[in-house]
Length: 210
Image (cartoon, rainbow, N blue to C red; front, top):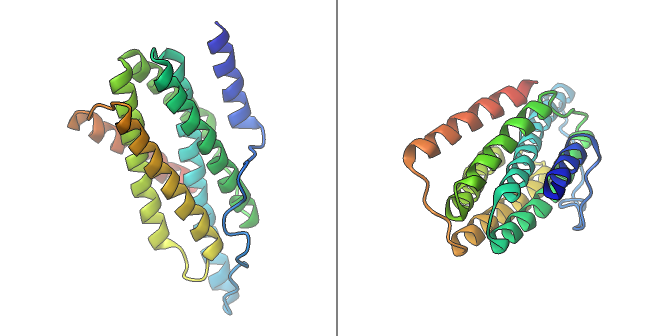
């Protein structure tokens, strides 16, 4: 019951409280890009803000997934690995939210929906056993890493601030996947990976606009 209360509180904080980062905000030393064409600047800012909104949604989902997994995980080492990843994902959440505000964008209106679905998936994966639990963690981080790589190629050349944020996030996600593998993560079946990619594609395409 205590763990369930903690999970509920974490969900409320993730969705409605302003996240904080213990680490410095990446890219703060880089000025905002200033294209000479005002219309181009507006178009670029909207696009980058939408990309950061997608990444923010991804961090919302990660928080929910790890919270659900921690709730049903059995091994204390697995719980520790999940909680460590969740703490760094909170920092990512803070960075994405700050960048969205700097760009004049907004967060996704569907965040509660993404959180609920990801939390349920986390509970189920945790109940399957620690090796599959960690397998979901590793695969989630791999897929997030690929999304970040794609977004890095779409950034305007002069937007070094957004680039610094995404590059640091990519490093952290790679480390999370490697940590899960060291703790005994199982390789997920291909149909499960495909289903995860499909769900991710729906979330990213929807949150880009809503």
